[in-house]
Image (cartoon, rainbow, N blue to C red):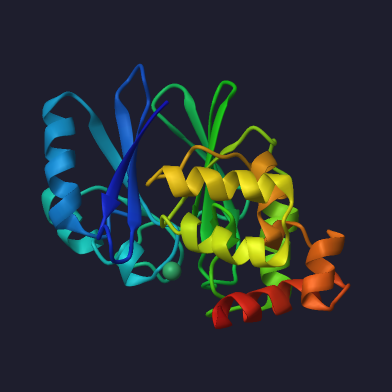
Length: 253
Ligand SMILES: [Zn+2]
């Protein structure tokens, strides 16, 4: 499996679209191609180079993820797999439903409602190579705002659904927010893993695909709800209360 990141609105939203291609068949999907003026030139080149674009995949309905669907469809009339509220969606997979891309990539849809009720993360597996596309649910070192959901839902999404994935699964979020996330994280805990992430973010503009679910459990305070330093900083002990308080603190930071 080959993953190509397409940064969009750099210096503003710092979004990512991702083009994922099956090595053998060159069948490919484009994830969250929200800004066609930045994505279409890449798709044009890649299609000319032999990839076969099969689906648009959306992580959730927000305009900066699904807002490019109509224009992409004009150029490539292909089905859209995404949450129920995504523009022009053709199919919403059930939680745990799987489908394949080409010969080798197996995709599993994981419903993670909270940031939006239609948020879906997608686990891509090609042999032992694993990646999860997390939209605005999980960021490197952080998580999305609870626009349509509760702290209990985000706790379930991060600490049950995503935490259950193999530790070596690489994380590809919908935005490059690591610098801001780690700035908040160090105010909560000075754990070595958090300091290490801070150092990485200060020296690298892009962090997508560089960290795994296993790493997130050690440096993402929203996945460290049992950690004594996190509990102390929030003044809470029950997981949902800690999650809620962390989000409030981050929103105010
Ligand atoms: Zn969003």
